[in-house]
Length: 618
Image 1: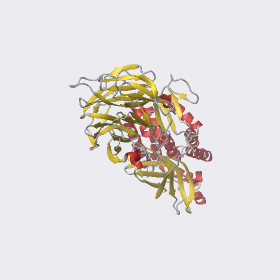
Image 2 (image 1 turned 90 degrees about the vertical axis):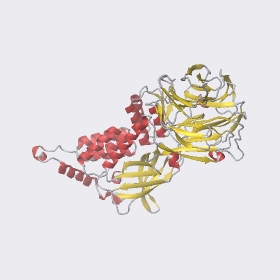
Image 3 (image 1 turned 180 degrees about the vertical axis):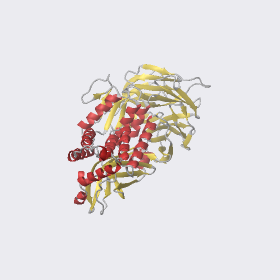
Image 4 (image 1 turned 135 degrees about the vertical axis):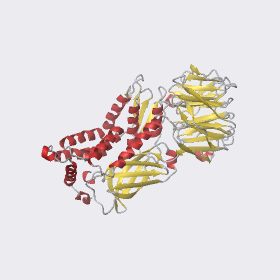
């Protein structure tokens, strides 16, 4: 490591001053004396700001940078490092301004413009994504072995006599064998299935505290408490259900093809909370399936070959589109609506909630013979046939080049195989996780104008810190939980808690009732993406599209119960990146050249991050 000290800090600062003097307009020196610069003090604060940045202590890093600038207004490093700190705080607009200031002094710098371009590209993507407009994707379908796809044991077979609905929520998976009088149910991925004896089951919805409600064809409801292995009678509904979905914490929607209705019920008392109404059709209304996406609910009218999409908050916001004999519906995390119709065809409909219309239908799978139910396991669409013997999967991939987000931390120099390496922890988030997991990671880096190959090693599962949980203003207080009525307050508290916990926050839980401006939601999403946080939404009211999109973009989801356990992130979303150091290279005196640029690619998805790697300041 001694070779890194060949370029002293004093030499680097003198280089900055020489460049600044060269760029000053002629006559400046003759007209007035330059302000005095307290270089050593400024350098001390700048070095401390660099340390704070590496520790992810961003507030103190900004404070030290401000002090450094006041002591030495010619400290060009300030603008580059400040831009990176502001980016980590989700304040991309201010980050862009800081980088532009840097380029005003260093107009010929070749590295900072690339950082600036990438940050602007990411910011534009996040803005468009949060608005809820359709994302251009292509679908990759395949037929899978049912036992291996669902992790069934050697002696476990569904062998359903006649399937009802299937679904997943928070890792819990259920499949109703309506004609076989049984529910297949498991609480966590990789756990064994329970075969529950239930007469003519139709569908299931999650309830608070790990409870599940099982809806039977005759309207009876049974409850499976957390930790129990058999359900007990809970109550009854005044209709014969054909499907049911949870829409907010405590409220579910239930459709009945027999009664030709869609009603809302409280989950705790099964009390009728209202009815949904639909435009007149040529044939009798037959609601065969439901799917919910925030405030939007999709209802399949099989008899009329129509899917209705309507807002649960604003009754006037609704639209419909045609599709032959829809059997089941499922909404992807990206907001595309998938429809299973006869005879075993799965179609994707990108939707515009702003324009209230469905775009052109794309058939993504044909020949799903006797396919009966579809649902999402994370971001994988799963279709199972009526006998429970065949399974098909569909996942979305980027149509062209997709974006992911890379967050680097704790850089160090280590030795391995008789070589020195850059080594750093890496977190990768983005909207195409299943696609990325199917491709090999390719890592390259640029440091001191040298292109360096790298490697990515997926991290082992580690213990995660307690999630940072915010509750709605009217929620009963709970020890360790916070409340925030607005996005502005929530962001301020998040920043304070981040500093208190020294960046040891992995998951953030926020209530849907917290009001965010578009700018505040962009800052929250940017903060989460830049630091590898997952955002989860508590649906105490209908989640907004920006909230749903923030959750899906960061690897989170909607939590239908506050005490839901948060599953471990995917094994490929975290790991370690190592980059061999060139044997003939020393640290440059130029801050942008000595900033490590890391490029992480999986198939068509690319991620980039920059971290100042100045070994003489470590």
